[in-house]
Length: 61
Image 1 (tube, rainbow, N blue to C red):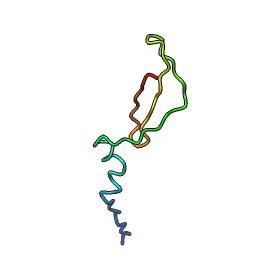
Image 2: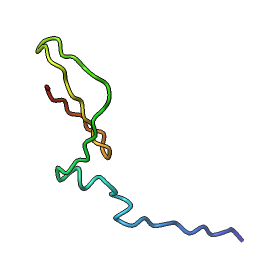
Image 3: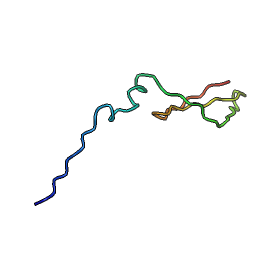
Image 4: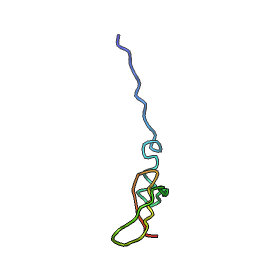
């Protein structure tokens, strides 16, 4: 006879871990340590990225 392998069913909390907060607008922003300079504006830019989803935003200092 064949060996029966049970499938492991993931919980909804494991399936959507971290993504539901980002979809609701609650990102976990972290500053990246690469200093950037915008030539057109002539200002330093602060680049932040979300730890959960990877979305990036920049802000002029």
